[in-house]
Length: 234
Image (tube, rainbow, N blue to C red; front, side, top):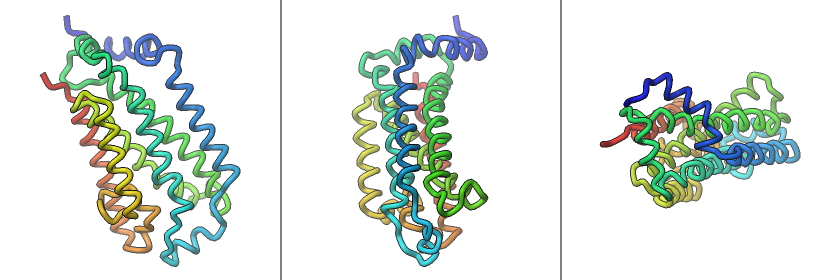
C-alpha cells in the first residue's frame, strides 16, 4: 500500500539514524570536517587588503580557492559517501519500494541535510576567514554568502550523476573531471557555469552583471540536477 506524504516524512525523520546514517557516523564526519574548516579559517584569515586587491582586478586564487573549490568539493564527496551504499548494495531498490512516489522526497532530505550543514558551516567560517576585511558586517555577509551556490551546485551534480547512472564511481568521476577542469582553467572553460566566479574575480575583472548571472545559473543548474536525481524513473 502506498504511504501518504506525511507518513513517509515522519518515517524518514523518526528512523533516519536507523536506516540512512547508522550511529550518526556521516553526521559526525560532516561536523568534524566543518570544525576543521572553522579552525583553519580562524588561524589563517584572508589579508586585510583583500578588497583593494580584487578591486584592482587581481586574482587571489590562494585566498578564494578554499571556499570556491575546496569546501564545495568536501560537500560533494560527503554526498557521494552518504549515497554510496544505496547503489553498491542495490539498497536503492528497497528504498524506492517503500517510497513509491514519482518524486523521491527522502533523497532530497538526505541531500539537503548535508548541503544545509555545509552551507551554515561555510557561512560562519567564512565570516571569520574574512574578518580582517569585515567582521560580520554587510560586506562580511556578502563575502560569506557568495560561495554558497557552489556548495549546492557541486553536491547536486554529484547526486544527479550517481542517481542517473546508479553508480557512485560515475558520480565521482564526472564531478572530479568538472572540478579539475574548472579549477585549472581559472573558470575560462565553463565560463558562466564555472564555480570559480570569486577566484577568477568575475565581478571586477569582467562585470558585476556577469558575476550575478553566473551565480543565478549555478543555482538553476543545481535545481535541475536535483530534480533529475530525485525523479524516480519506472
